[in-house]
Length: 231
Image (cartoon, rainbow, N blue to C red; front, top):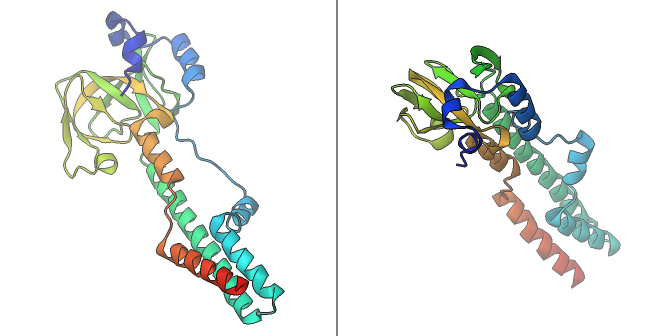
């Protein structure tokens, strides 16, 4: 992970945190510490289910069947097109639900040192270089490198799949969205928003395109019907 904080903050200033002016400038530079999600209208989503390689194949087959008067084939192909769209909508909804579930694990607020004073701010306003404090029960609000404290036991199972909490010491990375089960530490924020390990996981979930067995079967049937109709 790129140590953004360590590159542009002198070592003697790490324990002091940022000033309000520095935090404001970095917020403009790096953006909000939030998970961005692409929003599309219902009409655009509906249209997308009939646009693409698989729908094109089925639509061509339906058009050819209608052109030669094979209405039984046309009915079957039209039903396949609608079912394929339904499967696509269901899978997209599952992906959206997964992202929402991930976002529920984000910390709403963070304990941060600004202008040499500890205060609580919305977690979305954190920036690289901020000095934060996490303790028992807290959700880590951003990816950060532990800078002070004896140790902390962190539950990061939702991100890494590890079944047991992991002990963190000074110099270790604390991941956004993980939960402090024991201990208390101070840490310097290194990455925020979509650049965190959490954000990259959410992006993978959002952009993953997994073709189901049904969609593969529909594609094979569509190809067969096109070749049959052409023949």
